Image 1 (spheres, rainbow, N blue to C red):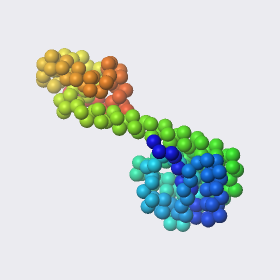
Image 2: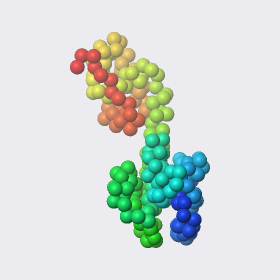
Image 3: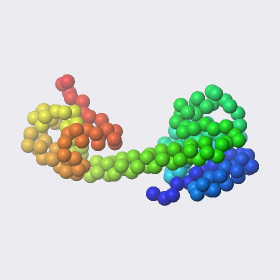
Image 4: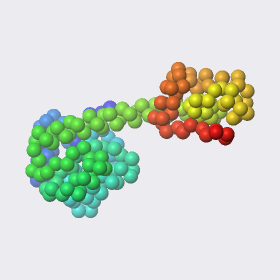
Length: 209
């Protein structure tokens, strides 16, 4: 993974420069934008890092950008900066997943601590996404029948029961089940269930519960 970047978004040039200098002085990469719309247009929403985001801006406010990133599946951690102590906005931002909400003029140590937490969170997010992508790639190697058998295996059904549901022989179920385990690199049904949960594969529903 490339070095993370702290994206600073603030329509106040003085505040933007000050935060940028502070972040770079701490040895971190920093890129600033005068508006949320320019940041969205930059195409850097999937890069590792975090966002230091002003609340009140023209065109698109900080909370509006947060909502937009959430809708499009981008998960860069956000630290809000505001010159106004707005309890309602703070509560909504934190509920929506913001890492911190700091008031201007921001304290250096508070900001760097929040950035540190944000970058750790982002690294964990990328690690989980990489793991999920790897698992999905393995699942895509399954044949349609192997995938079908797998969705029954994770219900806890025995091979004989699965054979009855799919109207195939028990030996055929055993063969497909073995191939699923081999391709996905698991040795137990419990491991298989955990894996399917990570990639959102639902178990099959028995026709006669």
